[in-house]
Each structure stands twice: as structure tokens, then as C-alpha cells.
Length: 149
Image (tube, rainbow, N blue to C red; front, side, top):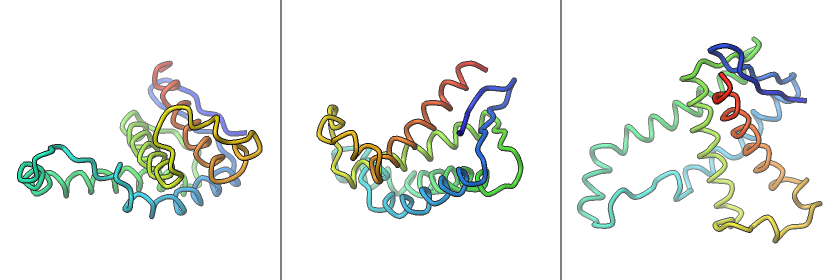
């Protein structure tokens, strides 16, 4: 069973080979949803001219940052080494997991609190809801580990 814990100035992500592969498959399956997600491209301004200027000035940097975060997550999972994240890598994981979760939630039509009650316990244990829960769990454990270190 996966475990995430603070270890000095690093965060240990203890996963076996199967868990790594499962997480990589999730990243591969959910990643394309990000490009279609409104969460991935939030508006900074309601006024169209200001929004266009913002996107011209910052849009490419935001996209590059998001891609870098997902690449960091993927790279750490692909490495054969034990996963020990620096604080910077931990923040990259958190941002990547967040955008993946939001894209998946949007695809599932989950846009308000209380969505959990709409599904049976059996549905929560099966994809895609189980995938959403897993991404949320990893994110929550990383936050807890950051707070402990």
C-alpha cells in the first residue's frame, strides 16, 4: 500500500512497481482531458480586451509551467529510484495533481459540493470516481507530509 511521509527536508513517496504503473496510467488517461478543461485555462479578466492581453503576456508561461509540473510528476514516477521529493518537486506534484483532478471532475460533471451523495459506494470504488479519489488522496497526503516536515 502506498505511503507518503515527510522525511527531513524531503517527502518520501513509497509506492511499489504496480502502484507506479497505475499512477502513470492515470496521468496518461487524464492528461488529454486537461487541454479540454476550462480549469486549465481560467480567465483572469471578464473584459475581453484585458483577457486577450493577459493571455498574450502570460498564457504561454502558464501553459509551460503546467506542462513542466506534469513532466515532473511523470518523471518521478518513471524513475526506478525510491521517490524522494524536494519541496519544489512536491509543489510541482501538487499543482499537477490539482489540474488532473479538476479536469477529471469537470469531465464527470462534478461542479459543486455534495457530488459524492449522487453516487453509490460501489460507484465510488470503480473508475472513474476511484481515480478521482486516488488523485485527491495523493494530493492530501503530500500536503500533510509538507506540514509535518
